[in-house]
Figure 1 (cartoon, helix red, strand yellow):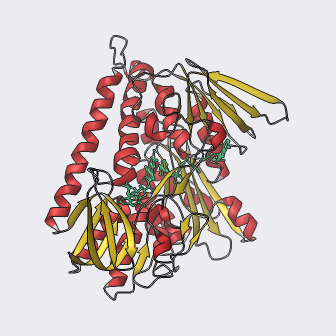
Figure 2 (cartoon, helix red, strand yellow; figure 1 turned 180 degrees about the vertical axis):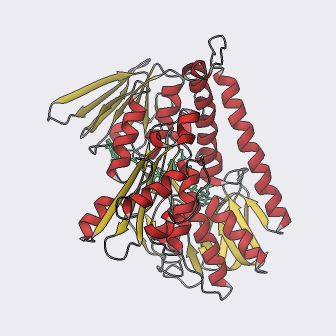
Figure 3 (cartoon, helix red, strand yellow; figure 1 turned 60 degrees about the vertical axis):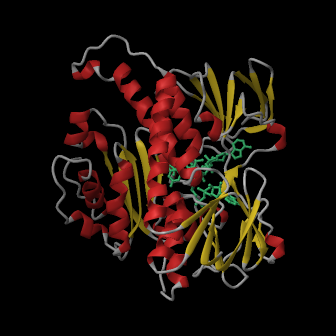
Length: 466
Ligand code: FAD
Ligand code: NAI
């Protein structure tokens, strides 16, 4: 078979690129090594983790908050099997959705492992061992990422696990040790803490979610601590051992003293690595840098003409919506358009409760770059809507340029922050000033009023409700 474009990998980068290419009239094929489409995000990432976050949040509210709302129920119990079955159902429903979209856009799907024979020929190795070969004018590499795990961590998929196994546990851990208090640690640690597990975080840096604005990490830690969790910061793990029913984590502690922690499960979430294994990139001479495929900043074309790469397999944030934007960009670039992505405005969200959401630059980044800025904050506890719902933890922080008032960064921790950040992204896309946001009418009572008030605080310190 001969295609205009072949996409290798069906995650949010790959399947979106395939749809956009097909929309633009290209004869398109997509190759996926698993027998389901959707990649990490749909099958072992964004969607199943959010399903468990939502279920565990319901349970936590039922046990901790219903009574204060005047709702009396007998002590709720977790049916983990049902919770997992529901999560599986959510994923399957969306797998069906992607199959539908492939058919609708007349994209040919190949289930099998794709690798380069040469620049225009791809081999597909199927699960039954048979092989097929297709020809293509252009290729998009969208093979995503896998969890990083170091040899001394003795990953066994049973007690020493990554996020993939943590999404399918058959029992609630008694004591879950989480290595890395980044995004996955915060989210999946929250899931099991809400379901009753003791959770201990061991983190190399000095705070949770250390790459986000420091205020966010500090506030999130307070909220996650309320779930009964423990933290070891500035602590470097040196060994993880499966002792049978128990796991032993050894580390060098903050004060230089050795630390030993025993639990029944250990979740390792210390980042992810680009996945190019078996692609045979050497056959076409594609350049990589520390495992990532090197691409042109604007076109995402590799050093080999006609071969592009997108998503987790290239530089930048490992996020589904970033991969999607890149998929669209590449398809449009191939068809002669000149699209652009503003990477500074890719939002980042942590789906804990309260949620954390950020766009633009952090206070630490502005300081490091010597950019003069002003900051305005507004706490959720001063909001009517948050008081009514009982979700009073959190704040909005707006950073604006000291002279021009242009919004440079917005950082939110609080109920519905994940959705609230869209206003900030849109405002920044249009290069709004804090004054612009502060003079925009926001419905009352809503959580969004905190954004307006933080903008008022950033412009001459004139919030109304604090
Ligand atoms: P992937 O989704 O990794 O897809 C790559 C696909 O390529 C896979 O299906 C793989 O099987 C296939 N493949 C690889 N090699 C080959 C080959 N040689 N032949 C054929 N097929 C191949 N991001 C968010 O934005 N929001 C979230 O809430 C979020 N939650 C997450 C939760 C967890 C637990 C994890 C692990 C990740 C989460 N992410 C989230 C990150 C998100 O999943 C990734 O950024 C996103 O999936 C990257 O998309 P991609 O298309 O680049 O690659
Ligand atoms: P991460 O980069 O968010 O966090 C890893 C953490 O581990 C960091 O805080 C780091 O300091 C720490 N760490 C590294 N090595 C360590 C060591 N040896 N000992 C102790 N701590 C160590 O990576 P994470 O959580 O694994 O997630 C991977 C990727 O998946 C992220 O980059 C993120 O983009 C994506 N993701 C996104 C989500 C979202 O958008 N809501 C949810 C989950 C994952």
